[in-house]
Image (cartoon, rainbow, N blue to C red):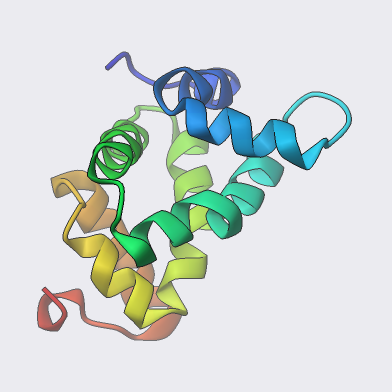
Length: 128
């Protein structure tokens, strides 16, 4: 995966996870898809439900490979988007976070662990 830059995150997400584009398009939000708005919407409508159900392993693989690309991006804006747009919500939901750990790759796991510890005082090593 190419190094993600902030302006390309949403187009890249929509290309790699077309289900995200379908979900966003169904929302009928006017204007250009702004990254924080898209992630806030997708966290609730696609990402968390996919993790909670675990019913779509290919979708989950693509989602978490994309999230790993965000976690290793050289762009601080991209990493912050992942932190704020997803991990802040998951840090307050230990059940979802615990299920998500099964799909996380190394950089994503490290960032999620930092967010969980900082936001909710959670230690992910006890959840693995």
